[in-house]
Image 1 (cartoon, rainbow, N blue to C red):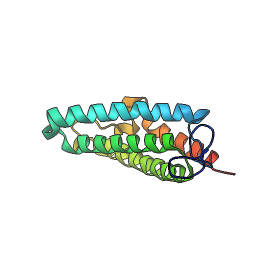
Image 2 (image 1 turned 45 degrees about the vertical axis):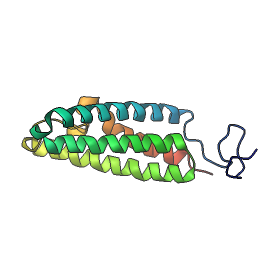
Image 3 (image 1 turned 45 degrees about the horizontal axis):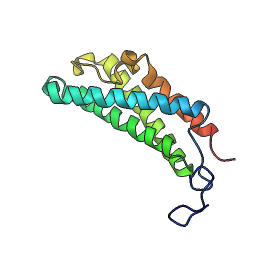
Image 4 (image 1 turned 135 degrees about the vertical axis):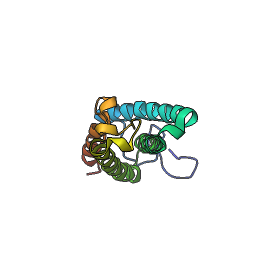
Length: 146
């Protein structure tokens, strides 16, 4: 079967050879990143539009988290080896962000008059923000092509 670009496609319409990332535990990973995307985007949109002057740093960092979650969700759904590698790098960057912001909010809480998505390593989100990138990196390393 051919795609519209002349490239061969698999029976499910994906380009041949594209690594499928949304299967098994990867499906749960995509679902969790999707939920975190919706939560972080909604939270950020509300906070920035109604009270940005109260805690601009916190709300901007929540916005960064939202962008990261949306991008990782997209790459996981897209699939393919390039998307897997990009998602792996993004998960590592996300973990660095969570650890940096989490440490910053614990060491200097006065810098954050309001919480971010990554405050206290994600305590407001049941620590999912610190567990998700670790789980994502493990899954993505495991799912690489043979």
